[in-house]
Image (cartoon, rainbow, N blue to C red; front, top):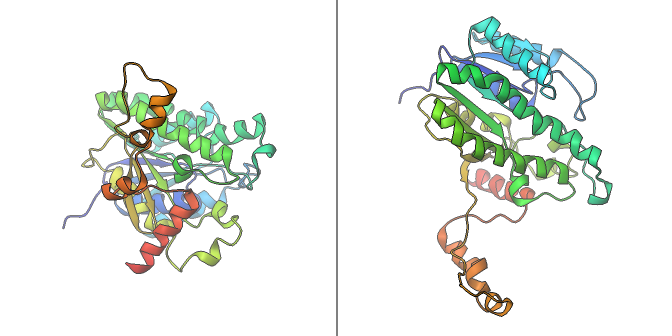
Length: 310
């Protein structure tokens, strides 16, 4: 079996100083990519600044024989995004791969504790930040007629997550960005996909009692990184797809519709009487072989159970 190699490719991984991003950067480098390790070293809410996380990951990559440089700019501004892409170009001559992993978080709170400011705070990094980095890399990928962009979605955006509205809504937006921009990207030799990853990272550790439910090794970031590396490879031709990746399981996430009910003269009564065809009952969904999750955290625990039985 031939190895998946990224020799000659240049990758930018945002939020790569810890957790999932660190795992992505290390494995991309191990497979031959030159990596820009971006991380301003902020707290979960975006506060502070610490260069050591990015520098430490670069040191780990170099110790393993790879090539990497550290970057400390923020994705939250266009200037920051342009600066990190410019550093890739100045240091390595091009940019082939972008992994939009950077994020910020709040401790969980109910809907009545949200505000326009709390939404803007989360969206500026997760959503606008991803767009900022893509926008900065886009003309260079278009000119070379090649690029691989991997965004970060979440099961929270599809299934919901209690007391986590701002983050869940932002991750749903990433789905729309990935699907819509992929329609244009394919004309330029660029593939844009997304992962909905699961790992024991800093924000996950804030969920009360979550670590007590996790078997050892089941939710490590290193279980997610192989899928990201494959999506970054030139032989991976998928575009506009979202993949669930956690607990050693990679799935394809699709938004689907039921066959539904059609009438030239619908009335509330005909809709009522045909509603089984509209919603499609659970047994028929089960017979399809597809998984219909109920809530993001519950889906995660289902995959952890699958991992422990593998």
